[in-house]
Structures are given as structure tokens and as C-alpha cells.
Image (cartoon, one colour):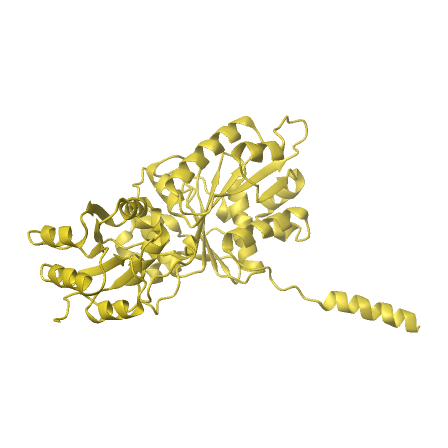
Length: 426
């Protein structure tokens, strides 16, 4: 048989394996995708994939009819970057269908086939004939997205950094303070390179909390997109520690900030290509760009105080995020300023139960500790590294970064044992 006119990209046969970790899947690039499905199950899966945050830049259309419908459609229309077709046939029948489809495909279009048979020999034959990928039904949303991403990603490329967005249930709940301390904890405890991006351009406090006053920061990045690359971004970073850098907000009111939905996307894309962890300190606003940035993050930390307004706002946020991020882990809940003297409050356990969530951390109200840190331009771990609050930030850092517990030195315990043995000998 003649060779199909598709681009060949070697890949293993898809098996019934657990869904991949959603946080490790890159966003799909700006490509056009058209799917031709035989059954409604795959069509619904493709519709769900098209609505996923990682497919936000792709243009997706779903049709019914399988390979035959695709062949008829493209006989009079140009082909997109990627065609996904489903077939219930195998062997010579499937190869014949694909041969006819190849005759109407433009050069450069990639083809993914979803079939019924988990057959290595069939896969090898399809690969020889130029099919980009072969998946076996049933396929999940994340499997489809991962397959598409793999077709457009250099296998030698470094993994993307994890984006972690921090948002407050209400203004003043301490979301920024939590994000700064978590960034510091990831950098120090795990020796992981971190960039903290302060997205509150008018009133950001990251520069204050790290005692930094850089001349440039994130404002220069978003207002000069034509200059933006990894070298330019590196010049805008202020070094806070060996592993922590700050992309500071100007915190001035010399201009209004009516920003477009995609304003921060180029900055985030370049930054997450440079470091393993990118912390996004979001302001308490509800604009198009805040909503888009929040939904697109790999991990979300929602900080609240235990009162009724926070409970209402948290529920609204969680309802939206659960709908928009159906294939991601839920946000991490941090209940902050618990036990403030003379303030009536909802019990943390009841607050979490109302949201049907288990809090990642319940942080007590420590006015002196937090006030000292804020006025000294420090994070909590610098003021009191052994406090219970510092341990809470370490726990959050471990949860959102996906890092294992850092190895603790055993020398102090061993020294204690040796001293007791010396005492007995004496």
C-alpha cells in the first residue's frame, strides 16, 4: 500500500492507565483541532477536553461521522493543524479509510486515530504510514490533552514550572502574606528556584515583605511585550535569597490599570519556562484577567478568615473553579487569623464543613508575630523560624509544590545519644 501523507511522530500505544497528573500537562499551543467521532461518548469527551483550561488557546470543533465524514468534509475544505478521527474498524478496513483521508489532507496536518483494538502490530503499521498517534477507547479527557501536547512539544524540552495562584476570599485576609511565606518556604526548605510575581500593580506588598525596592518589575514586562523574552525578564527580577526572586509590583498610582484578559500570559509563560515554581500573588479583584489567570493556574490557594462574608465568597469562588477546572485538583483552603480576641467567628471545622473541604492549614491569629514581620520587611520564618505558624507555611509549601519532605539531619539526635552514653561512662 502507498504511504499516508501524514506527519509521523512515534508514540506508544495508549493503554487503560490512570489519568496523568493534571499539573504536569503543558497547555496546548494555538492550533486548530477538528474531531470526527463515531460515538457520542468520544464526542462528549472531546467537548470536555475543549473546555479544559489547558486547551484555552486551541480552536476545537467536534463533528460526528468518523473517518468517512472527515474525508468528505476535507474534500472541499482545508485541513486544520490536527485531525482526530474515531474508527470502529481495524486491520485493512481501517487502513483503507485512512488512505482515502490522506488523499484529501494538506501537507503538515497531524492525525490522531482513536480505535477499538489494542494491537501493537496495528500501531506500528499506522506509525509507518504516518499517523501521529493511536489511542484506544475508552480514552479520558487528560489522556487526549496529553497526547495532543506531546505532538507539539520537543521531547528534550525542560518541564514547565508549576504555577501556584494565591487568592483571598476577601480583601485583607492575608492572602499576600501567605503567598510570600510559602514562596520563601519552597525556596529555602526544598532549595527550589522560585519566582514570586506580585500582580497587585497598584498596592502590592511583596517588595515591602522582602525589603526590596527594585527600580523595575512586572509593570515593565506587561507594558513592553515586544521586548519580553527570558533575558529581559531576568533583568527585571530582584534577588531575595539564593533560590527566590521577586517580580515586584510598582505599587504606585501614576496610571490606571485597565488590563486585557491575556495581559499577563506572556510573562507567565516565560517565567514558568525558567523556574520550577512560579507564585502568583493575585489582588482581590474580579476582572477578566484575574479570572483567566486563576483558572489557568496549576494549583490554587484560597485564603479566608472565619466569618460569614468569607464563607459566602469562598463558596462562590469554589463553585466557579469546580465548574471551570473539572479535571484539576481542588484549591487548597487556608483559614487565617483564627482566634482573634473579642471577635465572634465561625469555627474552623464548621467553616470547612460548609465548603465540603479539608483545610490545608488553620493559622492562628498572632498579632505580634505578623506585625513584627510586616514592619521589619521580613517573612514569618525570618522572625521566628521555630514557630507553629512557620510550620504551617512549610506544610502549604509542600502541598502545592508536590515536593517530598526535605531530609532532616540526624546529627542532633545522634549527638544527644552520644552525650547520654558519655554521662553513663562518667
